Image 1 (tube, helix red, strand yellow):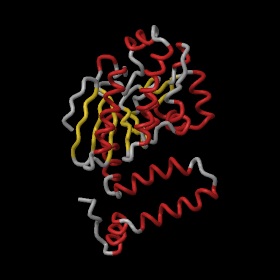
Image 2 (cartoon, helix red, strand yellow):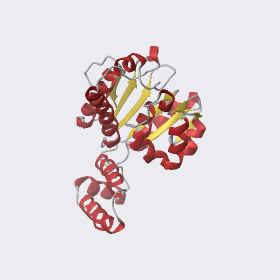
Image 3 (cartoon, rainbow, N blue to C red):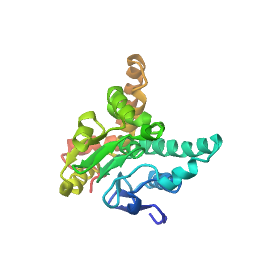
Length: 262
């Protein structure tokens, strides 16, 4: 991926795109530039057929410290319309990350504060270092975790959200796993190894099947069982007759690897 960025690093190799938040001097706090660059990077990754999995992490000791202070100073003097435009960009980033038709892994290498937790929640899988801490501390400055709220709510449920949103308390990586914000916690030295194990697992699955799985999860959560009955039957019927599933089933019966696995 040749596009250059100011606030993030993006590399692509061996079917994996890696996005690193790259403002370690401010603990990878995000501003309007980083939000725009992340959206642009995700757009490019979505179109890149060579990319099968996406890993998101932070440079330095933190994953992301939330909103940048200088950006917040500017927002303080924004009009409502300016604030609305600005907030919609953040909402668009979360929506785009959540709906990316490729598996996403948050490699949480350190503290994740405020809006950063939307990035964690919007990823399909989150693996955290034991050093990581998490806090949705917006209420402490008179704000709320609004744009990230739908994704955190989906990940951890209302009961945990009521406590986390209202108290703004900082929780450990193990507590984040208990409430469901992250899937796994490992020692810091084993973080990369565990992430790569997940990557290796994901790239052996059918790329189209992974995209359909994500779309299926998004849609059936809003359906009644009666609606889901016909919809899910149609999804599997269409897949069975498609090239990828035909190859996958043939490979299984012939006891060989499917063509999408090197």
